Length: 363
Image (cartoon, rainbow, N blue to C red):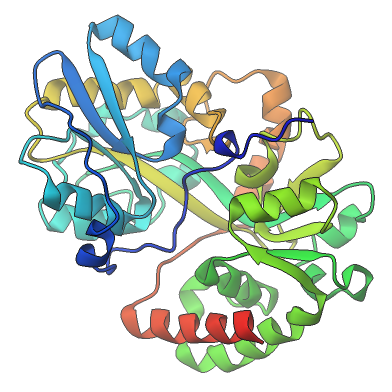
């Protein structure tokens, strides 16, 4: 099997938040020389939007050139915008929890409600926190997924895989990989303790820390998505804690022994939105791009992008049955009912969680 990591996962690193130092990010950010001009649209997006099969139909339909810049983390996006001239960028894709702050800073324009296919959108995405800000829409949900468990069906009991306690299961000692992203992992541990993300308090962190450190003897690899993917595909580990459809769905066609699920105790939902920049000089064209991404055809192409697969926000997305199977489409009603939206912490909680995670990495 050929394993092209550039096409597996090059994008969603949710560790870079709004509070990231713009100066620190700017030192490593390269700004492409895209001219803001009629006949072109400049989009600042995650890697799943860079797929030619998604971009080229829009270009052909509107006789324009779409210039794509991919980034990881909202802090990086804001740094790029700060270094750019007003109007250089037209479209922004963003982690949903970041939308309120970005909107209040005047970065995103208010979108007409009718721009979105609300009637066919999964209700849990339509009604999720951050979908609207004070009753106004600045970024429309376009794609979502879960933090859960990926596993090798040849050696892992599916019943074990759906247990939030699999990370501590002695059957998989030394066979666990962990996605190196502290906040969802700590929220997942909270769920295994019966704590919803919104209910986790500073006083709960001591027990969460205890459980996290107790997992370490079972852990062989802690790494980014590509690292844990490689470990699972090559058989170095049998389970990835924190992975889900975005980690393995696009690998399953050539690795049918792989699968993913969420915990019986409930999954943790991530979701992303697409909006138009307030300073764009191409607002009408940018809104047409948003409509394309939210359309059934666009949603199907986005969901199965070469970079990473995940669920479309629009349930009317055009996706073939085989791909729907890899995305666990028929399980979504149950998954969504049992899951909770991942919430970003305030500064104090974030610092405390990061300290716990650092201890886990160094233990």
